[in-house]
Length: 401
Image 1 (spheres, rainbow, N blue to C red):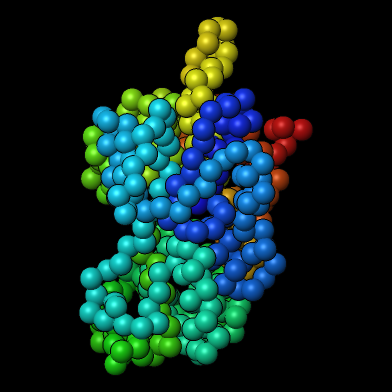
Image 2: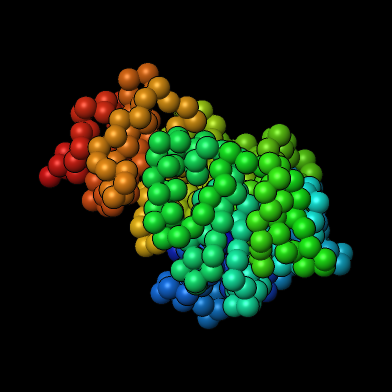
């Protein structure tokens, strides 16, 4: 029901594939953009109405069969899919685009009423219903989805507190220095933080009433949102090696086994097509994965530099973004570690461009309020992988003028 599957089905038809196309989805609704749930839908700001990726008529007119089903087993060797209730489908080619499952911590009280996770439209509806009769919200986890939910609930007028173990939001992905810019952005709008702290329990009688921190502080709460990230939804796979984090390893063609492909949150793929394996949880990458996988499923090829025919490859720079209070941060590239962060701009405004440098070259960049420059960096990173921070400078868009 997300970007990867929707784009794959669409690409199969656009590429001329005339065979049978079946989409299996647990949710009984047309595929939609999940990213708007935390960014727009919860806040009530314009944007949520753009959630459906295509209409039901779009799929019907292109003979794309949509079925509501819960897949309980995919046998990669037998090319067979089994759904809850016993229905079975055999396939010639299949795409795994099952996304992720929110992580629910084993905290005392985690199953109390008014404790939510956000992954589906139904989850968002439930949060909104409770938000309308709540005054205080606590968000557990200073992750991207946690911070987006915090911004949205604050824009709804709730008192919001964010609790996180790290010293700053997004510390693992962006570093504490850049993450602190988001702390300041939220604090300026009235959000409170308890960072560097763990949660001992959720308290209440049937419904949550407070969050007890490990240090002993009790935070009143009418609703709690868990934002501890996701784990790849791959429990149903048989005959496919699954990594320790639940992902599946794919090549640049996104194939994971004979006639079987993976896209989106579950896929671990080589950076730039030939680099170290990475996994990116963002709908833009999922969309791009869906297109590449579909071209290979249809047996189409592309012309390489030597004009030899080859499989479609996912070899572009990965990109993701987050929007909070209508301010957008773009992240281009991938940096699991870095030696230095070269900063241009002002973190307090906030308006900045940050380069993540490893072994003398820029491996990733993050920009807020710098749309022209971040758009240019996507093109520049796809041209070269060995940029120095000084070469890119404070206004990399000038390099494309």
